[in-house]
Amino acid sequence: MHTPGNVLVFSAGSKELNPDKHRVLHPSDDSFMTYAKHFPMLYKFVSLFKPIMLISCYPSTIGIFPHVIFTDTYLRFPNFARALMLAQKKGYTAVIVGQPLVVLDMLVQYKKQAHPFPRHLIIGIGGYYCPISLEKTLNTIVGNKHKISCVLHGYGTGESEFNSLVGIRHATQDIIYKPISNRLQPVIKEGKLWLQNKTKKLDYETGDHATLTSDGRIIIQNPPERLSPDIPDFLNQWTESDWLRRTGFITKQQDNFIMQLRQGVQPESNNNITELDFYAYANQFPFSWLDKPSWGATTSRTP
Image (cartoon, rainbow, N blue to C red):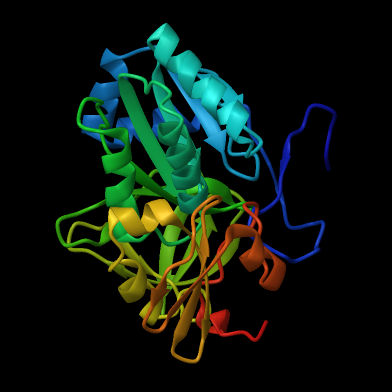
């Protein structure tokens, strides 16, 4: 039963139209400080440099944050730019939260327009796989003069909890996740990852595969229908220059990759690679910053 004052959350990635698949935010959901307490480096960082301004670039409600300054960009670049400029002007620690391709696009535009970056900046990304090359580009764009404690990777579902696991990419290049939720416990059943509600005794099937590390943390692998095995190999060959040219939305047809360019970038010819103007791609293939990229085995399509 819902009551006035409830905040309902639907999954940002699901195309299912089941109205019952949602969750109600709890007033105690101070997500950011929960994350910080589980990562000593991050906790020290946010403790030293306050106040914190959380800038949301996520296409769904991400939580309740009573101990930070919160602003939602609604995925509009002018809102993002004004928020980041305000954080820089006031000396706030900026925390940008969103899906990988959206956060990268916002930062590419911001740097291209030569706006000033805050001195202290943290990036939190989730929603789908983040290529290693993209994460490196995020760090490079911000520059060595600015401090990023780390890039955090969140994992969860809209119906269960936004970020029930949070991870950092390790030297092995794997993102190793740590359970941080007070209400959800990750459970691995026959190699599949489930999120178990500790109080309601409900299990949420994620559809992903997972393995435990020796210290009880988790490595998550997406199934082929979500992430085709050749997509990470392809994207991780990209240089910073490639990411500055391309949005990351791609379509594979047989052995040919068709890629969307950022606005104003001109196509170049390459073997087995076709680059399309930003709007030409959007005219031929499904594209929206609100949607996840089609990186699964169903990526092969005919326009």
